[in-house]
Amino acid sequence: MAKYAIGIDIGGTNTKFGVVDQHGKILQQDRLLTNEPDGVQDFINELHEKMLPMIEKNGGIKNFAGMGIGAPNGNYYTGNIEYAANLKWRGIIPFASMVSEKFGLPVRLTNDANAAAMGEMMYGCAKGMKHFITITLGTGVGSGIVIDGKIVLGHDGFAGELGHTIIRPGGRLHKGTGIRGTLESYASATGVRETALEMLTDNPNVESLLRDYTINDLITSQTVYECAMKGDKIANDIFEFTGQILGEALANFVMFSSPEAIVLFGGLTKAGDLILNPTKQAMEANLIQIFKNKVKILYSDLKEADAAILGASALVWEVSI
Image (cartoon, rainbow, N blue to C red; front, side, top):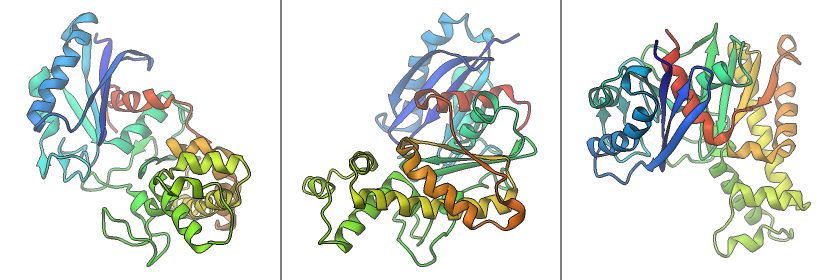
């Protein structure tokens, strides 16, 4: 019986990959720059070159059940990566079949947010849950919806784009989609930066440590957090505002699928209670009575560096998602 799976997470900057056993232990891992190879076949060749020693070290191809891949706009039904905005491979790429042909292994592919949800269900804080939502608060806002123990995929494989739901009609422009007022425009690391710049401009007479970072364009969600921890008013207001919007959105999601928990993951969660407290408050304030005080908001307990690989590898062990 095959002992191992390969998990691959394709990001806009880095692609992380590793050998994972059935208990969710990563035995080896590495990474490569996603957009450095000239084309998708060059990328797959480089991936194969880096992965082959790992495969051989763990007993060869016969010991591997398959490969799981999480990728932007990855379609579980077709195995294609379709019109991914942050990859230089344009159009529709039959990625799973290309990788399968190169490695000689079965390949499953889904979008990166769904892979993260699979990882939480098999190895993380959602283990044993059949109804939950994962929200990744990173450069963007990714999401995976699990109902009755299955990822919600929709008729075309792209269901669950909660980050692109409109939470402020006519609001901030999302440059990638051209849509105004989406959750991702506010509750991502990019959104926090935009909020910081807006609040500094709208409050010119309020002193703030953040003004020291505008000179060299160094405002990030991390610098906002650092300033907030020093008691900076505007920095704290930024997290209150972000949490308010996130909480309102989570209330909508709760009333849609009635999850047991919402699992938050990603760099923005490092702000801890600064963002969690206003998020919880806003969520509960916007729920109707039958949903109040029923849904837990949890932080993922998977290591950030490992979660993407684990989530992708989880696709291999599942008979069906």
